[in-house]
Length: 322
Image (cartoon, rainbow, N blue to C red; front, top):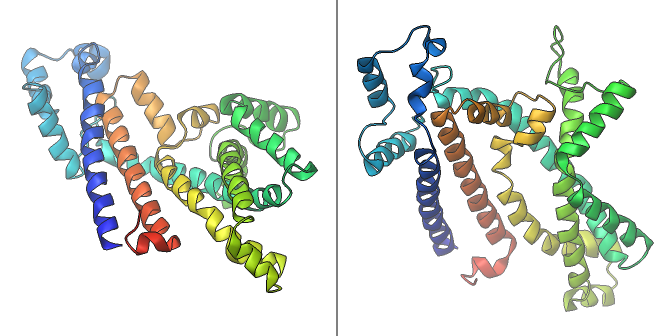
């Protein structure tokens, strides 16, 4: 198990470096000068001189060749310094941490909701293979995978907010209202939209693995010993069905901090997705690179945590086997 963890950690560091090079290259080779915004009077109130632009270029680490710029940026990023936003002249990391609770709360709620719904639905579909219940659940999962999230979000706003006025259609809070219930009401529709695709994927995983596990010898042995159906399903089958789901959940932990750019924009949710879209529209390169690197780090940590949990769930990994 120790060798497995060390090997996964080394792979995580290697991927982190590769992604940092990739994200830096995309911004570096993008057309235009990131300091163009400073060259217009509307950005700072006055047109900056060449000396001021040179000092600004040096402070942002834009001097030197591509290798020198990357090393400067990567060194600062490793120490938690993601640079200064070109748009509002504030530290990138501070703005990310400000938006993080909003996004983490929404994405965490959607992930928990998808798991709570997917586990029983997947088990029911797997134990009723090719029957009415399985066909209905499978049809819903195909619908969940196929329906575009932005279209579903717009339809929910039209139906539940504009037509029936049951739920607020945008934002995170009502002006003048400061209560947890108000935040929950604002988060119901975006959480449902975000959970739909995850739930559909998890149901397919659990269903297929339930069908396989029910044909294993340990299940037949438990049945022959008189074990109850619930004990077999929840004490044996479910544990083995959750192994691929653990990996899938780990790969989605990165979305807990980055959110969904599209859904947050549709519902005007003040999270990292909205911040990222604003940075893209304003060509705020430090913010784009900071969000990309931050999300990559969280995704790698999520996968690393999933590998560790997978090791505890699968005895073969504990014994050093692949």
